[in-house]
Image (cartoon, rainbow, N blue to C red; front, side, top):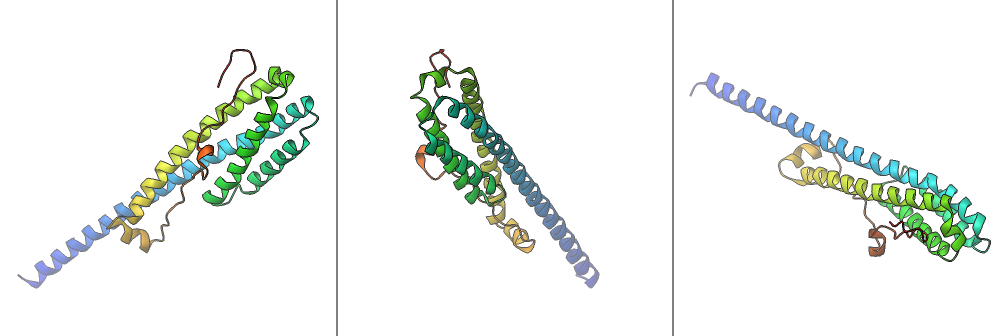
Length: 196
């Protein structure tokens, strides 16, 4: 073998290595973008839910006079969830979980007020909340799938070499800590025959 053919083979190997690294890098970027897109979907739905809370509170307040603590707690949990808007997935999930619990308590309280349960405005808000909760669940699934793909690529050999070199970090899953909160809230709509 001549020196020229050895150098040619080495150059070809380096070009192939460079092409491989670029392809892996681009896959990592695509997975990171998919994860960010998934997080954006969750964020939009969580903001929709937070924006619904003041209307729900005002509607319930009009019918209930003895539930001040429940309404104040819900308002406080909403403020905390909004404040956690730019936090990491785990922190945001915890704040949103507290908001979900406060919403659940409000809906349970509403069951004790037949006039409220029959209110068209309240029923519409409940239906919108149910729809938003479904969208949150779908967005969470999409995001967690994107996180799984990104994290697998970051941890798998040989793509982990490129990921480490260029500072790609694993993303956090959007998880619900309490088993009871993994299910959608059970919403009941008055006596009109409509259901969740």
